[in-house]
Amino acid sequence: MKRMLSGIKPTGQLHLGNYIGALRNFVLSQEEYEMIAFIANLHCITVPQDPKELQKNLYDCVALYLACGLDPSKATIFLQTDVMEHAQLGYILCCHTYMGELNRMTQFKDKQAKGETNLSGGLYTYPSLMAADILIYDPDFVPVGEDQKQHVELCRDIAIRMNNRYGELFKVPEPLIPKVGARIMSLTDPDKKMSKSDETNKGCIYLLDPLNVARKKVMSAVTDSLANVHYDPENQPGIANLMQIMSSLSNDRPFGDIEQEFKGKGYGDFKKAVAEVVCNKLEEIQTRYNEITNSNLIEKTLNEGANKARAIASKKLDLVQKKLGMEIVLK
Ligand code: TYM
Image 1 (cartoon, rainbow, N blue to C red):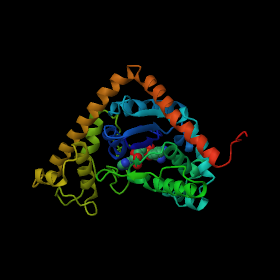
Image 2: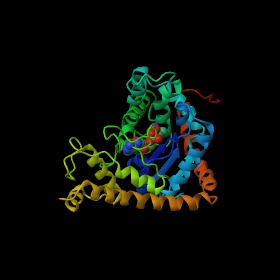
Image 3: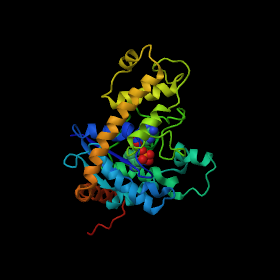
Image 4: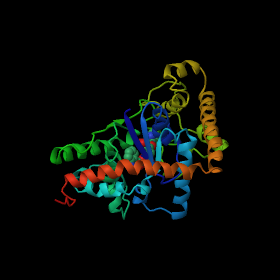
C-alpha cells in the first residue's frame, strides 16, 4: 500500500480552504493509501501565538480532522510534538538546506515584503522542519494545496541531495495538488488566498462558523458585473472561486453542469445555491464535531497515533544519524 502524509498548522481555526485543498483529500485518500495526518503544532509557534487560543485551536483541529471523516482505525493521526524525532531530523535537514533556498521561499519572502518586523528564525527555517515531517515517514505522496507546493519541492531537493551524499536515506515524495480547489480565494478579495489571517473575517469561512454567518459570507461574496455563471478564473475570479467551492463540495461536480443549471439566472440564485451546499457540509461537520468533543476519542486517537508514528520515525532518525556518522558504533 502506498503511503501518504500531510499536516495542518493550527495557527487559527480551520477554514474551507484547508478543507477543500487538503483535509477532504486526506479523507478520500485513507481508503486507498496508508494515510498519516498530523497536526503541526511546532510550525504554528514560528509566529507569535496566544497560548490559550493556541490550545483551543489545537483541540479543535484534532476534533475537526475526525469530524471531517478521518478515521483513526485507518489513518495515523497525531501531534507533531508527541513525536520528538521530527524536531531532531528537522535540525539535521536544516544543516543540509542552503540559505539561498530558504531565501527563495515565497511564504517567508511575502511576510518580509509586507514589512513585518521581528520575524523569527523558526519561521525562516520552517521548510527544513517541514521536510523532516515528510521524509521521516518515507511517504509516496504529500497531498497539499497550491501554496505548499514550493515547500514540498524543496523537501524533494533536500532528499535527493542527502541521498546522493550519504547513500539511500529517503524516498523522494511527490506533491499531490487537487485539480479543483487547490487555491480557494478570499470571498471579499478573490485575488487573495482564503487564509486564517483574514483580518476582516468576512472573506474566510471557518468550519465552525455558525451556519447563518457562513451563509451571509457567501451571499456577500465579491463577484463581477458580467451576470454570467461561467468558469473563467482570469476575468471572473469571484464566480470561478464560488464554482470551485460548489464543485468540490458536491462530489467534484463538473463546471459545465453548474454553468448549465444557472444559465440565464442571476448571481443571487447562484450564491443561494452555493450557500446551501456550504451550509449542508458545515452542518454535517459540526454535528460530528459536537459528538466528538463529548467523547474520549481525541485522547485515544492521539495516543495510538503517536505510538504508531514514533515507531516509524525513530527507526528513520537512527538510520540517518548512523549514515551521517553521528552515532558511536561499538566494535
Ligand atoms: P497550512 O496549515 O497553512 O494549511 C494546511 C493545508 O491547507 C491548504 N490550504 C489551502 N488550500 C486551498 N485553498 C486555500 N485557501 C488554502 N489555505 C491553505 C494548504 O496548502 C495545506 O495543504 N506548512 C504546512 C503544514 C505542514 C505540512 C507539513 C504539510 C507542516 N509540515 C508536512 C504537509 C507535509 C502549512 O502551513 O499548512
